[in-house]
Image 1 (tube, helix red, strand yellow):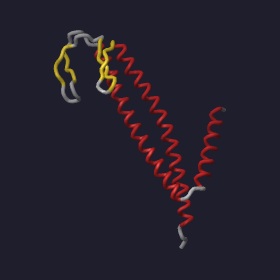
Image 2 (cartoon, helix red, strand yellow):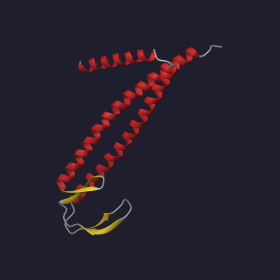
Image 3 (tube, helix red, strand yellow):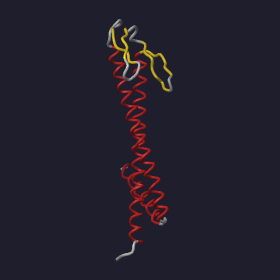
Length: 160
């Protein structure tokens, strides 16, 4: 029952917004349409960035899990960059360096490192869900403005 109330409130707000848009000039509608399209594109870029960051953190969490299973003294390749690896030996699998951003690293235990990755993944997924909602609402506004703009332009066009 609560969801139907939310649906009624949303549809009422959309109707009020559409009513307000119908009172606007063609230039104002064009401005609103362009602005909301720009905002939707920026939100989609942010969504893609969040997907990329989430993927990297998931890879890091998997790597930490794999690293915790390796015995001390195990020979391995250590990544210095995305394409440069050097040979190394695992000294202490219970201590890891965690990149916390802007070039800063913090030493943590393996469990703390895994918890850090999981908390960041959860935060990014929550932000992703919130951005999806905002982008959907912005897209709806842009579509409404576009439809009203098209209707006004048809009214202004001379009929042959």
